[in-house]
Figure (cartoon, rainbow, N blue to C red):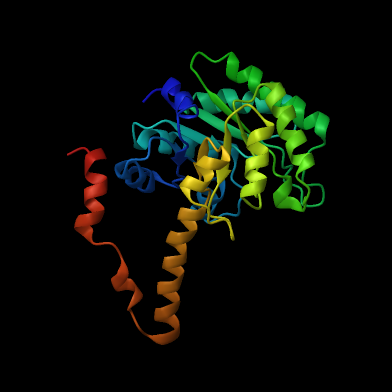
Length: 272
């Protein structure tokens, strides 16, 4: 599937699910199940490296992108957080470097990385997005740029400022719009109706258990799961380890997937 095919997925008759692997194995398993595209997860990547989210050096992030891109034939969009720097110029450099890894797209967010001032002011946020759009448009290959408004994850409770930020990102030329943390279907429906570009919604956050049919009706174009699959996997690991450490029992370790089943997902991508 090409980068152009990836763009076309956002304009289909129904939304598509783009799951978030954190290594080559999880990427291949998700591809084997039939998902049409993949997206990286900054949190899952960092945790799998034993680091906190937002602390992985840019070179390691790009190496990770190459790993996920190379693991399957599917198009991959990367979670590039704030773009390895604050300035519009840093976003330009980030998009160019990301595209060189073979990515079909990426997201840039307006979270600063500073808990005391977590969201870029409006003017700078828009200038950063304009820079990202211009960089993407000058690439030799198609590149789908997703603009993320992060304020709902950092204390914002009003929907109007979120919509205003997304509309500004749309005017800047972003291909996909994304505001993680939308609280309910009414909010999702309102956001989708307020913009004309495809909207991504993330599932897997506490209290967000909407169905594919409900999200389709709300007007969503793309559905990701963020770090949810990673947290499910590591939750099972921690639960099994605690059972052994605290009780001396090994019941949870017997609940793991069988070798044959696991290998059936990996075999199509493994050279013999």
